[in-house]
Amino acid sequence: MPEINWIGGGVAGLAGFVLGGIWYSALFGTLWMREHKLTKDGPFRYPVWLPMLAAVGSSIVGAFVLSALLGPSPGVTNGAIWGAVIGFLVVAGSIKMNGLFAQDSMALISVEATYPALQYTLMGAILGLWS
Image (cartoon, helix red, strand yellow):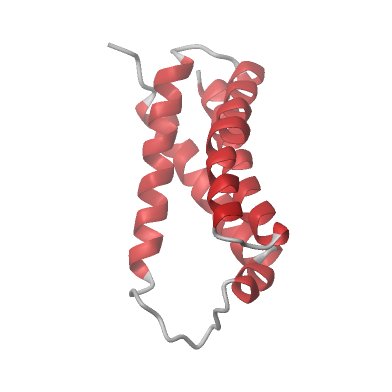
């Protein structure tokens, strides 16, 4: 059974969620909303708490899985490298593929694919630091 750093994973997952909040608001919120043809006034398909709850839950679960893959003492450098490998080559690659099939703009694909790549890099570094 793989070892999971439950506390470090929780902290890393929350940090990844916070990064997403910054990414999709202050950094690229306007571009993201424009490309999806969304406005701050709605109409909304879902209550705002639903995607937020899904995002924080997914981030924490992702950090727990990353913790199990990294093992008990990865170190900051190895944690960040393996987080980046998973984030850039696995997660971002899947998002990029979906965006290309959906005929999304390159700007939108870049924003949506880069966030999880950086998220997993950050989470890996935190898990490495926590060990």
